[in-house]
Image 1: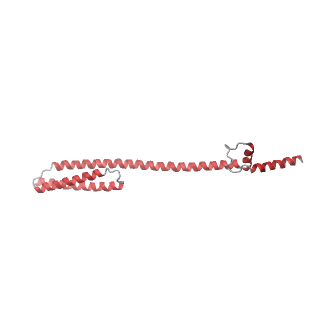
Image 2: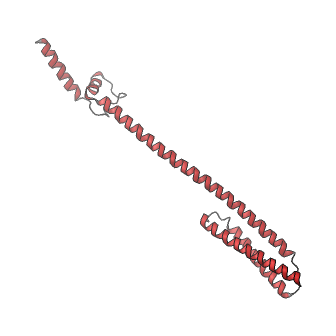
Image 3: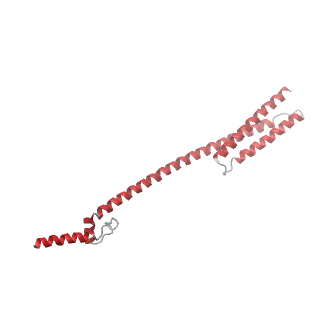
Length: 176
């Protein structure tokens, strides 16, 4: 009989403890401060549930970190590409400037024998000034890469046209 009372008492105690703290949040091993709550968490599986939840949270954080690292890598690659593009565009503008300077020197050294030649040289000087102004606009930080590419293409075309006009004018002068 005494054994039966002990078994019944133990069963009632386990049942009572099982209802004390049964959720994963309530069964945080760092927060359970007494033996009865600890025993209740152990019997009800609360500690295991808390551990499973902590592992799940950790995996979620790892996935978030991985996504952030991937985003950072993409951003870094984009930044590197933009810096490379910016450097290439700077070198292109320097090349354009040198080309315009070369045209200016050639135009300055061109001899004019009559009013028609002087008018052509003056027109080429004006076109050269416009090309320099277009080149200066390329330094505007508000320009988009697409706008810069379009401006560079127009500037290349203008410079090529000026070079051809200068070549033709030089040939005319030499033939006279």
